[in-house]
Image (cartoon, rainbow over all chains, first blue to last red; front, side, top):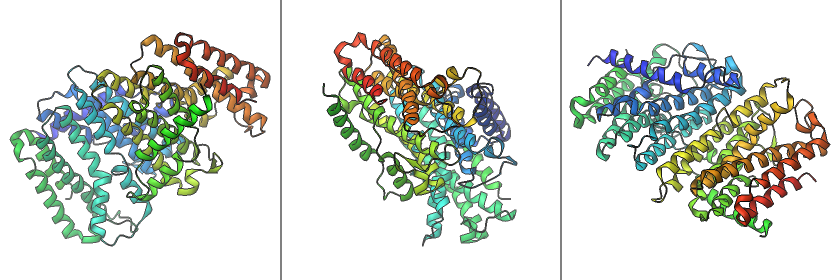
Length: 286
Length: 286
């Protein structure tokens, strides 16, 4: 497979659908619809929705049957970025090199735009669920997945830990749990959502969950490594290489990537994309 | 029927279930679970979940089959209050006579607790939907309802208008639309959710929607009137009696209450509670 072309194709499909599901900028009241579109279309990699499409495809499900679901993952991701950037949380003026949502639209509108994207995510996914072939059990499992990954045991719990600055005795265990909650949970949910929609078997979903947890953690540790190498680290913030050192951080990422790939064995060549993606995440370190 | 006892009984059932569905305060990370519980248990009237239970009961559905759904409406309501009170929105230090969530837990935790309550609402409702008797079409209709009432065409759109301070040419029309979005939409959704769960007929749901819109609007205008009478008005804020005068505001509320009651005719004595509730909302003016 041509990994880059595959990503490019999926990204185009996802961005067209995102444009379709977000209300137009002139919709009343315009300012919030502008803010929502500004943040959704500010250069994301679309990793999470691509994972949903790719996973569903592994089980023979065509993209359109899972495209709204995929987009809902991107809306959830964007909601979390807007709220994370707010002055009371990370106070980040820039996101992907552009002014963050609240710098452009104000804190009030950014807060409400984040809320609106979260609600819109749960609204969007319905459009894939109305189809007669979708079972009731699939709907329940999917909503369970899409709410669990955000709740206080996952994304929001990780975000809380990011702002309260605890001093844990076992730093590395604490940080790994935080990264699992803050980053890996949503990546896992993106993969599992694709598998749930495609009615994958339980042991297949378990294997994909293992894969998702490993690449999610590797992704976040790699971010830490890149920040360190580019000298963009925040001295106050606990980081993985900050605790174990750069060399061990790289070794541990390599191990996670290998574990991720091992988890895919049962799928043979159907998992080509996920296999390459794991390597790609590792290659970002260089 | 004894209106006060009915409310008291339902309130007790709802508060016990809310206690059951919220994670305990010691759950990791404790601060967000404390903040969520603080705001949920700070003296709400539980109007919205009571409406859900009462409406389902009209169609013979027992409370327990719709109790999680009812509670999800209260969680959505609490989410909106926490975010509304934040410094970047209304900057309210008090809510129901107690310090608002961000005054006790800080802006960061209040923001995330609001997010968490919204997600938890959509997670909670699932527990009523897993039952074998609940049809797939009911699940879709319910999620449609619970997301539509919050989105930018409803609650969040109204909230945006509250913060942008426009100068509309037709003030009273503008304000009525804002109140429909900000207040009536969620009250309507609470009623409609009960009817949807009980598989009410379309014309029944339409009648209840009319009722909900009328009492929702009357509820908000009454709040304005009470603020004016208690001299707690905010001079900068557009209010209904501020535009049309106190006398006409009271007359218009009386008309809305009558319209609400007229909409209930087809239900005869089954609608006793909703009928009394409309009168109760009007009586708050005195």
